[in-house]
Image (cartoon, rainbow, N blue to C red):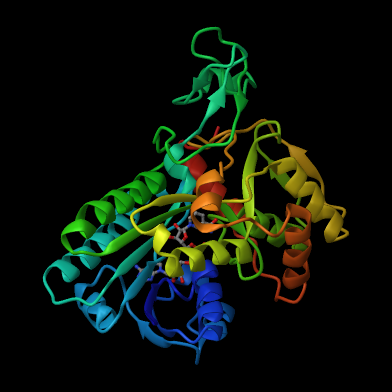
Length: 375
Ligand SMILES: NC(=O)c1ccc[n+]([C@@H]2O[C@H](COP(=O)([O-])OP(=O)(O)OC[C@H]3O[C@@H](n4cnc5c(N)ncnc54)[C@H](O)[C@@H]3O)[C@@H](O)[C@H]2O)c1
């Protein structure tokens, strides 16, 4: 199977997949509307990366006509096109529902009403569907905490507390069977995408594969989008000489996974039959604190900006989450190759060769404050 459609193929992850599949002689079609939040203009660096390596359709997943055109003759779909800002999703609900949910339902409806040739659909879902993820209490009880209380956060109690004893709990690797508990509209739309694809693909005799990516980083991540991608946001701030404001106590953590590892996992899902019908976590399996990210970047840019740990918090943010990779390793043989320091060094090297973008972060934070989402 070599005819592949990548929606959102001009984006950060999609463009890298396009480059890698081009080297492997796939016939690639990209459907992407070159969203200005990511691309700024039609000849963005990301778009230039894939130009000539694919048939490019400048179209929108919200249009069934564009889907009809894009799906013709394809065997595999990798569905990346999505709105991706967690905070932004909490006030731009219509856009997130339209692009992520309606966009996906359009694809499935077009497939249901035509003689399609698709054998496999791969969805880029997100670890955000788990919300806080899996925890262990001091007495070794596994818990899936629902939410942190605003009262606690205001008092500076950021860690998750045991439901029964009120003692602090420890985050443990989250596996695919963990409780689903979306904490943002973005997360909810990603889960809706998963469910829709899993439900409808059976009647369409298509093999679905759901990949729940952790926080992906690396060269190509938009430096102008202030709504998502902490490494890019911090980099743009540092290069504009602006201080870094870190929320909570800076010890909140994420599983940062390097772009090439994510692409390896995605290609395994495309090419390996054992992926069919399954849901997989894709990450590094290792938590890194936000403070560590800020300090590493400051050092790598040789910068003297201040890092302020502010104690502020955003509603809907989770405390920690990192992936249990046992399933993806045993089914597909995926093992991340890059550790965080190696990845961040490569990322910074790339950023240093890019034009410095305007820092729009303060504006995006003001939007959250205006909507009561930032405390
Ligand atoms: N980057 C991450 O850390 C991460 C983590 C988990 C999941 N994901 C998922 O991976 C996928 C790709 O993420 P990314 O980081 O490459 O995002 P990105 O924003 O860089 O790329 C998304 C692409 O989709 C295009 N797009 C947006 N709306 C569209 C529409 N209506 N019609 C057609 N194209 C549209 C954009 O122009 C862009 O090129 C998304 O589905 C995202 O939810 C990403």
